[in-house]
Length: 109
Image (cartoon, rainbow, N blue to C red; front, side, top):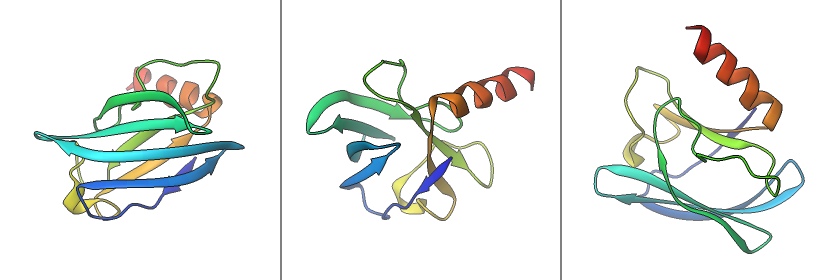
């Protein structure tokens, strides 16, 4: 699991290598929620994924991308808001194996 540093701005785009995958991540606010777009090697992968607390961001697993993203509210169970990114709300990248492990923990709660 890798913590991804973010800025406290409502619209940000950055490049990052995750598990040997060249990723471009775009986080933005629409209404009351934060959303994520993901490109892999400059190819659109998934657009408009809603970011919720303790819920894998990408709703589907595909063979062309290993892993998923996860926001954690460190002080409760609220959905992430950009004004408290990196302080209260942390973004993590999980490999496919870590996603399975996380899902098993959530299901056992």
